[in-house]
Amino acid sequence: MSQPPGAAVSLAEAPPAAELSKPLAAQRVQPLRRPGRWIATAVVLVVVAQIAHGLATNPFYQWDRFRYWFLRPTVLDGLLVTLEVAALSALLGLIGGVLLALARQSGSPVLRAVSWTYTWLFRSVPLIVVLIFLYNFSALYKTLSLGIPFGPAFVTFDESKLATDMTVAVIGLGLNEAAYAAEVVRGGLLSVDQGQHEAAAALGLPKGYQFTRIVLPQALRSITPNYVNQLIGLVKSTSLVFYVSLLDLFGSVQTMGSTYPGDIVPLLLVATVWYLILTSAVSVVQFYVERYFARGATRTLPPTPLQKARGALTAFRTRLRREAAV
Image 1 (cartoon, rainbow, N blue to C red):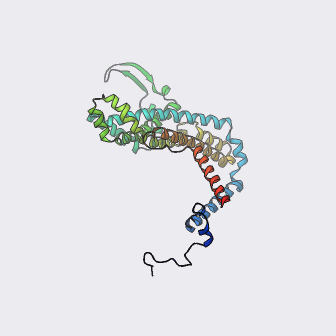
Image 2 (cartoon, rainbow, N blue to C red):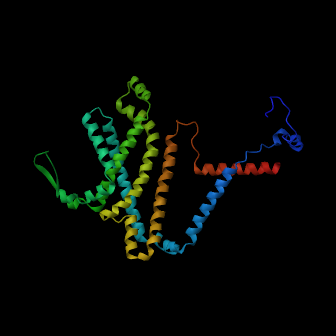
Image 3 (cartoon, one colour):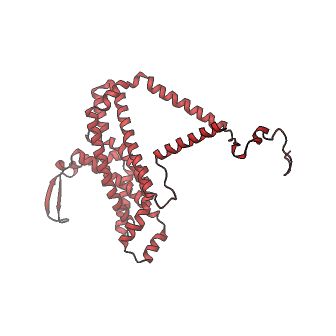
């Protein structure tokens, strides 16, 4: 039966006399016990330890061969091709995505229809199909020409000479990336409050100034994390260019695995670790870019990893001092 307000606390519930005799500043507040959290933590640590032990002790992974292949020139050459394809495709995709997003926001029904159709098409067709189709594009159009529409051509190009493996890979990935980037950019533009547009129009600011100085900086806070997430997916998607005869990182590993079938697993681990490094580097860039555009939107900027480490170390030292003082 619960006690009424103001009832005396029993001796069993009262704090120890030694604790009450201490000054108020020296008395400690005991945290709540959370047995479920400790049990879950112990289970997770056991599982992680088992996974780490299996990776370290299983001879099937052949870590000595992993160390041999990790910095081999063949693998590094493929890594450079991956970086080049990813950078060029990201640039092409971003430019195309911005143009498609602006066309989708345009007052012209033709531009809106073309932008929507393009986005719908490339988001529906698998990337590998796009790459293989472009790789065999010369079978459909042997020559490309510039001239008057439906009229004479002034300049003619041999498509088979223009469409190198690198060109096919960059164009295929860029066209596919533009469809997704268009939706990311459009979503960022729509996230800007309508009152910002109305205030800029009330001040009589030109349309171009409104977009570059008012709308775009606010939209970038929403665009940046989503588009960097797309870049991470793009880095992984470069592994598909192997199917259009371009030896990127995955292509080099796959070729070496065919030549040395006993090293397939360590070679796949090499590719895995390099992709982890690339995507982690992009994630670090994402953090600092988001932190930069967060200025003015938050009272305090999120701490960097170094600042978090210093804060944790300072809190640990303070706790040790308090424990020693008690």
